[in-house]
Amino acid sequence: HVKWRGKNGYQYYEASMNAMFHKKLSMENELRRAIEKKQIMLHYQPQVDVETRKIIGLEALARWHHPELGIISPTEFIPLAEETGLIFSLSEMLLGEACKQMQLWEAAGLLNFRLALNVSPQLVEEESFVSKTLSYIQSHHLKPEFFEIEITENLLVRDLENTVAKLKALGKHGIRIALDDFGTCYSSLSYLRQFPIHNIKIDKSFVGDINTHDESVPIITAISGIAKGFKLDLIAEGVETLQQMKTLHKMGCNIMQGYLFSKPLPAQNITTLLKRQANLFHKNGEPDDALI
Ligand code: C2E
Ligand code: MG
Ligand code: MG
Ligand code: MG
Image (cartoon, rainbow, N blue to C red; front, top):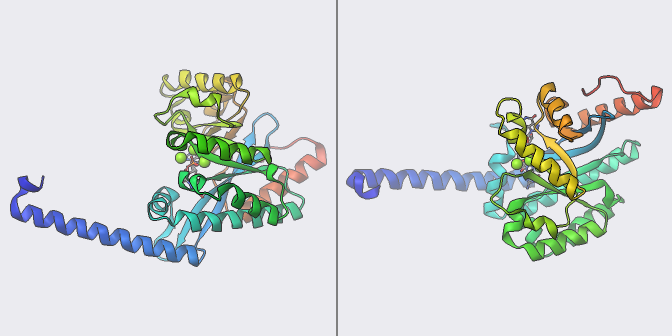
């Protein structure tokens, strides 16, 4: 469209490109500083077994507490971190934070759930991904069985052989692999045959539509069938209503995550939830309506 707009249009175009470039550069610098100053931290969202009503897992989700802009969503800064290579130092910092927090929960006698960590494709492709991940977990005296790694299908499109080898290595140590946002990527199902995964996460876009768009129901039914066939765990994300919960349960899904149960929360709030749950189950073996 440069030619269309003539000389002035071109100058305008160039100016806005420049502005965009500078904005990105300054965001990159801010992100680098935020990592150094530890302004990015984890919130945790419960994953609930709707049959026992217990929290069986937590997903760690990054939050940037910007001094002027407030909380910035990971959908904004994770792609920037991936583009700029800052994802490596960011992920390492967050893994350290997650391990420290898990140590605290263990010391408090509250650790009877798994922590799920999202990882970017670039991270998995890094040479030392497996050894670094394991050494963080082990140096905090934690069992790898308490950890799950969430990857997306994008990763499989990139370098399947290498990825399979690394995820198998993690699996051997007891770390579980979850396939996040399942069904939203342009990938074939054939990789499931060789792929060492333990858990499929139904994307929240399907869950959100479940009671309004009939098309989501056959898709979730199919995903549920795949999970059963391959003996994988199934978890639905983005569950916001009781109706969605009931429909999903009828379709064979027991583990759910979403605002209906809890938003992602800072660690202290999760500690409160875990303590309340421990007390409830301890006192009478039956929970009240703490989360549902
Ligand atoms: P995701 O892994 O698919 O995470 C689920 C997203 O759904 C989270 O968004 C969560 O806050 C949101 N969510 C949970 N329950 C509900 C609900 O009931 N309704 C709705 N509308 N949304 C719900 P969030 O925290 O903004 O994270 C967005 C994405 O950023 C994540 O998607 C993940 O791909 C990425 N991400 C977050 N933290 C990290 C991280 O530490 N490392 C990497 N590499 N990626 C991360
Ligand atoms: Mg995830
Ligand atoms: Mg997801
Ligand atoms: Mg996502």
